[in-house]
Image (cartoon, rainbow, N blue to C red):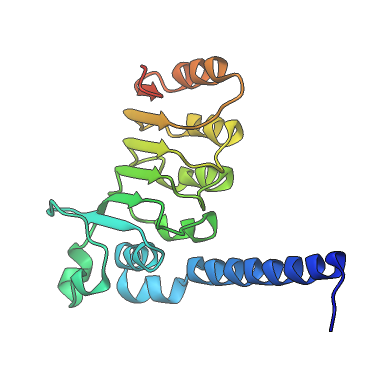
Length: 196
């Protein structure tokens, strides 16, 4: 059977589109908030499970190292109550998205978040970081290609921020946007592409 170039192109395009849709469905499924699970094990452990399931790492209170595997999480009722996430790292292997940010609710000890070349982080995810507005002190956004000026402007609502590091992000009117953030976050040290 012979295909013309245009019909072959359409077959390839539809196959790629189907795979992309399947991947998006899988990613969305893995990011869904499970309120029943959060009630069962507590918000911090449920959040840690979500982050690890999607390739991110956490550091909990009292620990020096990041944890990236379920087997490293505490077990037992007393440990569940004591487990508090303080730091989150989502790199290029992570697939966390705004859909799952409801997991951050009631995780009141998260003070440090880093998104480094995490392609699933976008403007909507940055806007939803407001869930952590009372605890988040340090935020790094580095090379997240789907974050634009609309997302960066939303950072003005994170009034508890003390350190904000923005790297490898293309911003239109970058000087205006950074100056706007500095005027809104007066107690925050803002570094954009290595410059304060």
